[in-house]
Image 1 (tube, rainbow, N blue to C red):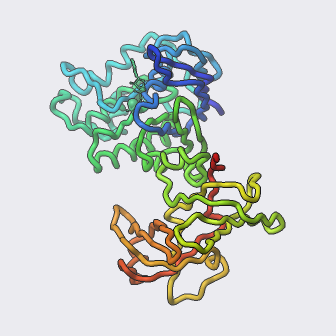
Image 2: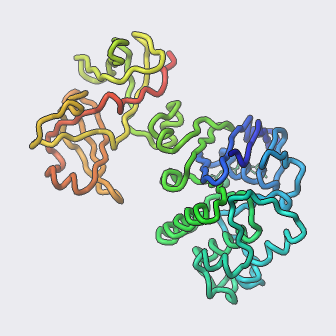
Length: 378
Ligand SMILES: Nc1ncnc2c1ncn2[C@@H]1O[C@H](COP(=O)(O)OP(=O)(O)OP(=O)(O)O)[C@@H](O)[C@H]1O
Ligand SMILES: [Mg+2]
């Protein structure tokens, strides 16, 4: 069921166009994320939803009711900012209770499947900040302050919590805890959450649905897994960190077997081809761009015969660099034909396969991993 509908929202600041025609729907009980570059209008959109700033045109509909003309405190939406704005002269308990006083007169309509938390004590327990009641904001850590601010949002029992980069000021340990907390709040209380972030990891870890805000519009939306796999344009591909992007020309289409053969642009005189699954409406001789996610570049084990699936798009190359990242090895491979591929493999696989810089290896790219993302304009 749709909880929140953003319909054709426009917003300019003086002459600067910020949002032009934003449309998005948030499902009840889900975590959704808005992802985009800095300055694209993500915070502006959240402020419009909760009523702190007014849109130039368009509608905000919550539970099928247009809330354009409601004041922020009448809206059942609360905003949690990157910096927890707590009142310095009030202790933690007073800060949390403040929100409920503010909305005490308001008759709330809660959707039936949502569990309401009314007492500050209960909320503090859920957020793991019991014991901090008497402390003042200057006497707690940033991570604790962020939870107090979350508690203050929860006490008004909102339909949806809007979070604007809630992790940006947290260290990695606090960040992991707050992430977990957000999931718990969503699961236990069935509260919908709309999260703004510019960390793609947060999007993947937390959200059921993601929206990409770019140049004032929602460019891609869907389950993070799908959007990451099939970005709709080269711009989105760059934004979400797609690597291994190549130029090519459609050289052959085999509609019977659903295969498209792409000729790659490369430094060497001989032609190099890659086969991909055929979908869409490509024509022979059309220029295209395609991408392969680094985790889909398969390094073949020397000790095993190639199975049918790994026989696709075979290349031999040398490892020119390997870098240890948080969870994976990031490997750069240069093929004999001069193409460079980035691959991501688990650290143990790197060890098991005795990989090292300078080693010659074979890689395979599954047809299904070749994603044609844009027809290139001439
Ligand atoms: N009150 C305002 N007056 C004038 N311009 C504004 C105002 N608020 C925001 N802007 C401008 O609108 C654009 C969008 O700002 P916004 O803060 O919504 O971006 P954002 O996507 O949240 O960026 P970030 O990721 O850096 O937080 C920016 O160019 C910003 O300078
Ligand atoms: Mg912002």
